[in-house]
Length: 461
Image 1 (tube, rainbow, N blue to C red):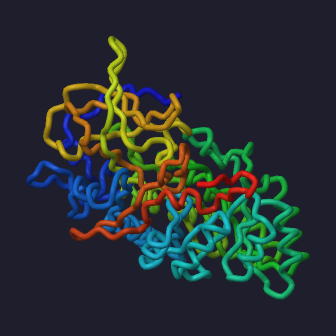
Image 2: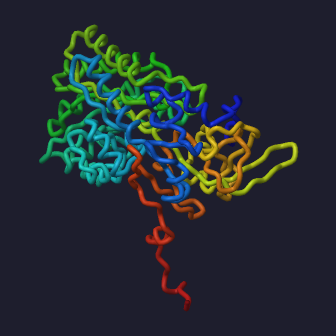
Image 3: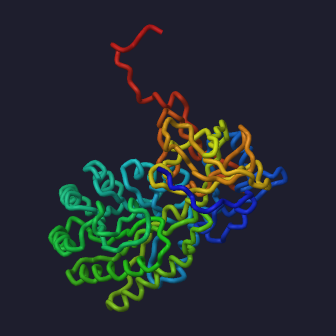
């Protein structure tokens, strides 16, 4: 079931614009959001309703200025607060496509990948392999070989991966980072907490000493340091400070054993605003907290500063993207609720049905109209649970109006499917009044291109 919202939405689309904040992760809308003379929402100087007419509906819309701003705030946050080397790498599971990988690389970021497909896409986008880090809890032998061949850093998650790497490595000496589960709890959805000990990810802390001895005896692997990730959509700062101490203690131990451990990857997890009640730290606040915590821990341990790495994903692209739909049918259940349906749903945004995620929406072609009704926004799939928003306060709508759901830049397209054989939407990148296609809309032919009809099932047509 989708979580019912307990607080009303703002009555007018205009009120969302008051929430725009210089830190993109704290803003409910992309930083360039404005209302034009037609009372329509504009993103990146482009009328959202016009974009829908031009590129089709539904449509993912990404704001280039907001993405670049987020990238720069992360880089500058480390540069201003950390005395050693640092690298920000984009956790591309949030949104992996050629254009996004190329854009973040242009801004000086590396890329975190978690499959052969994400690695392939990132390489095709021209990202330097030396700035790519390959994650995952069950990398195949083929994926490990692909990682070795391209020269990226491999984040080892388990013994099978280490043993396989040792078999594959004699002629290459791949760079390997060790992922540990630090045993740090944070308040977020149970499915996206990965730092507590009962997690499928990483080595248990009790195993780390044995793993370090393995690296001592396996010179074919270049052990570069430690990685840990405590979860996603986190608003608390203390868990990240605690994590710094845990990682630095292990870094010190590795150096005592003669290993050239030189990097610490603190993961990501900084949250974003999905609703007015969400209050995440800014990117600048988060980077300052992490950088200072690592420096303090290293001073206490009396070791040189490592290269500090972090992996933002959602906080780079989440609020920089929106999804625009066309409103269709309406159903009123007497004394219960009113449904309005849009031309997408769980196939383009799986988070509400998967995580009970809560979103905000408004009517993009009626930005100044007063709210007059509370409706349930339903998708078009043959699933009762296909509901995007349980209680949306909107002005009176008509079929053909443009409904916009905010903060869908992360985990919208990346989790999209063809359920009910719906076509996955197009995605456009907007900037200075221009919209460029990042991902083409699928066609019916795309749906069947990998199907095969056995000869015995073919009929004369």
